[in-house]
Length: 527
Ligand code: ADP
Ligand code: ZN
Image (cartoon, rainbow, N blue to C red):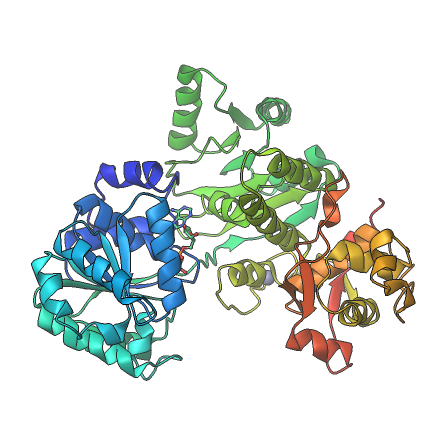
C-alpha cells in the first residue's frame, strides 16, 4: 500500500477547501503519484477529477486531460482558474487566439492542466509540444469511450492510444464510471502499455443495515436501539454539544458505558474519551460530528443519529464508520420536521452565494427524501451516488417496517396538476393548485381555472410536498427550471427544489400504465 504524502491533505483544504477525501480518492491519488498506469472506476459525482487535479498541483507539472465534451472542459477550466490553478483547453470550439495562447502557456511551462479533445491530440505537433513541456501524465476522462464494449464508444478515442504511444514513458490514467469487466479489460488493452493498477470503488456497504425513524420519543427510541447492541461499541451522533452530554448521562444511567465527545471539551478529556473508545470494548461515543475524522476502529457495530445529519454525504460518511471489519453493523437515523426546519434555516443563514445556497438546499432535500423514501434505503442511497442495486432485504423498508399504500390516485392528481401547469412550478405552487388555494400566483397564472384546481383537499400542503418528494425520489418527477420561487418561511418542510416535470415513469403512472406505492407515515403525522 502506497502512502499519501501529508501535503496532499493540506492542498485539498487550502486549494479546494475540502476537509477530507471522498471514499476512494486518497488511495487513487497515492497510486497516481507513485507512477504507472492507473484505472479508476468510481460512480459519477464521486470526485474522480480530483485524482489528477491534486497530483498536478502537487508536482507542479503539466497533466494533459482528455475529455469528450467540450462544454465540460470549459467548465473545468473555469473552475480550476477560479481556484488559482493554471488551466487551459484546446478544442475546435476555441478561437485561434485562445488555442494559440494555450499552446504558448504550455511551452512556457506555466500550465498545470491542459484539457484536450481526443481528435486534437495528434494534430499540429501537439505531441512534440507536450513532450517539451515536460508533461507528467495523460489523464483520460470517460475512459470507457475508447471501448466498443462501453455504452458510449467514440472512434476518436482511438487517437489516445496512439498519442500515449507517441508520448513514450508518460503515465496514463483512465477514469470512468462504467464498471463492467469486459469494458475494463478493453480499456486497459487500448490505453495502457502494461496492466494498470485497478481501483473499483462502489459506494455499497452491504454489511451496514440502514434504518430510519421519525423522531417521536428520541431517548426511548435510542435506548430501544441500544438494547439490541449490548456490549458492543458504537457511536451516537447529536447535533449539539449539550445534547451529547445529556444523552451520555442518560445512557450511563441506563447502565451503558457512554462517553460524551465534542469540540467544546478540553483537549485532555477529549483524548481520554477518544482513547477509551478506541481501546476498550462496549464503549458508546455520544458525539458531535467533530468525532470521527481519523477514527479508525474496525469493530464499531452501530451508529445512531439522534438528530438528522446535514446531507446524504455526511450521513454516508458517518454511518460508514460502522462495520469497517466487514461484519454486520446496524444504524438508526432519527429525523423530524423540526430537524428539517432547523437545518434549512442554517443553510438560509449561511453567508454564501445564492447558487451555493441552492445547491446546499438540494443536497439536503436528497437526505429528506432518503428519510421518506418508500423504496429500499440502500437502493435510494446508492441511486444518489449513481449506482444501481437490488433491494437489500435488510433495511427497514425491505423488512416491511415502513407502512406503504397504493398511491396511484394522489399521485395521478399531483402529476396531472404538474402537467397542466406546464411542468415548471415547484411543490408549493402545485400544492396550492391541488388544494384549491387561489393565491396571487395561482390567479396570475390562471391556474384556478384548470381542471385539477381543488381536487386534492384531502391532504395538507406539507403532505402534498411529501408526496411530490416521494415521487421525485421514485424517479417519477425530475426538476425543471424553477419559475415559482419557494417560500422561506419557518414551515419550510415542504420546500420545493425548483420546478417539477414528469419523467417517462411519471407519464406511465399518470396514464395508468404503472402503479406506485407511497409511504403513509409522512402523510398521517400531525401538522
Ligand atoms: P466525477 O468526475 O467523479 O463525476 P467530479 O470530479 O466532477 O466527479 O466531482 C464531483 C463533485 O465533487 C465536484 O463538485 C467536486 O468539486 C466535488 N469533490 C471532489 N472531491 C471532493 C472532496 N474530497 N470533498 C468534497 N467534495 C469533493
Ligand atoms: Zn432495503
